[in-house]
Amino acid sequence: MMIPPHSSSELGLILRRELLPGEHLLWSASSALRKLRAVFLIWLIGIPWTAFSLFWDGVALLPWMASS
Image 1 (cartoon, one colour):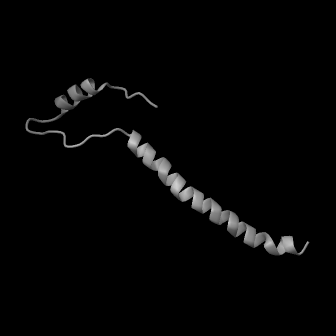
Image 2 (tube, one colour):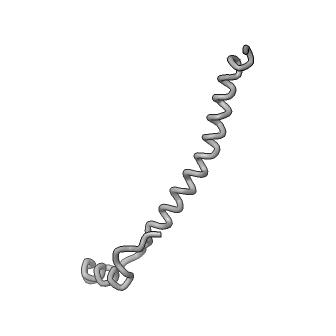
Image 3 (cartoon, one colour):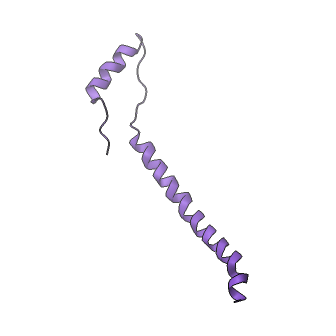
């Protein structure tokens, strides 16, 4: 797990300096959720795709294997 470069209090100070008067932060999140979502999508797509491609290759090679 990566440690963020700024602590939450430092980040709050940085944001307050950047925001104009009357502006406020609506939402913020870390990239950990994004990384978790990417890993989930890789597994969600990768496992069925791998199973299908192995099946497809097996069906394609079946005539050559059966003729031996």
